Length: 553
Image (cartoon, rainbow, N blue to C red; front, top):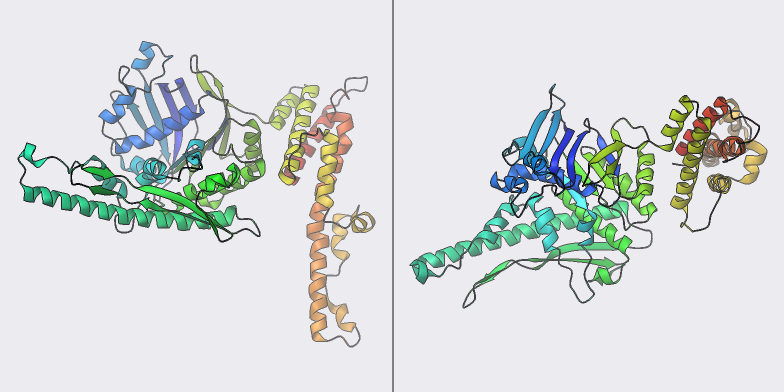
């Protein structure tokens, strides 16, 4: 199957954008910006674009109707700008030389019933913090009912076993009116009875399909939770299921009852029917993520293009748990998706970026600048080390050293926050680096390091423990079993000395080298006196901090 990626996004007078023209070039996007900066507008622009393939033209044109009640036009745009409002998305297929360009406006609906966009709509995932919080923002007196979020966010993309297109069946039930009074319409009683029976049969078919969908989501959610969030000594079993079935009851008041979907867990065998009352928000978010991603994995759709668009998804998690989710996003699970990650949290942005690698060719790192009443645009966000390189090339050595120091501080601080519970205590760069060095070496016996391994050249490592076990056979009266045990233990020691311990030592040496250069190059004000700061010193400091980022990742 070919691969399709979003190449370019142009938005005119739509949502918060007066005119956004951004070339993504098929890459993934990681972008940050404050509240009102345009993150959610980009999220909904892409969502609207994909959804438009399954809609008729009037239900797309209404978003661009300046006088209509469902207009999504930028209120700050001029009438002339709103008259040309549009969403234009270019999609590149790796088997073609040119991109396909799709436009949505008051007069254009290029995506209508387009097979590629229809498939992409089914295969893509859009998740916001609002969706996750809807899993547990209930009072203690309320039973959790996930039906609203399932109806909007999950059902349109789900497939039952007995009924594949459960969303179409639900739409039929929801919009049907089987309760028309026969006297007013002149309908015969026997025909009305048949119509009721057909409606009841559709309800039964829907309930069965919904049970199938919820069972498959529960199973995948459990696997997802076990793989990514389970903790030693604690067993969590989660379940989503219909607590109220769709139904109708007639007699005197003809009404249709929509289903309810409950969410409960068993904690070490004890059933918790109201998780919102007993678990903290971080744990609830983990469970909600498991169900939401479980829904994705339970109903995978084949498509040349898959988007994973996340808007401020992890704001209720601490940094350690956030990075667990980052690793999931970057794993093989979502390898086929073009990822659009939007956040207001600069610290999370930097940590995500560090996890990816600051210059990864497949990623675009951006920040939202401007405002809806003037213009919002995406601007490349350069890392501290990238800024340092630019300053270094421009011979601005003090500024370069400043950026290198900030990069070192951020790296050491993040390593500490990922390893221990963050505190408000202020630690200098030197303190942070020494703490990191000690943490790296805490599993390495001090005497072994100080008296044996420290300063040993790499070429001499393997001679500490012989590669051959010939000498062991010379031990008097040694049995074959004893020989096997000694051989195995020697192999483990050899691995420790030459690989695992050596990796710790090399990382500790990087920190020692950064500490050595801190006083001369990285400490602010240390190069403001008579001693000049030399370009080669700054360049070496830059390379050291690059190594520091790698060894503390």
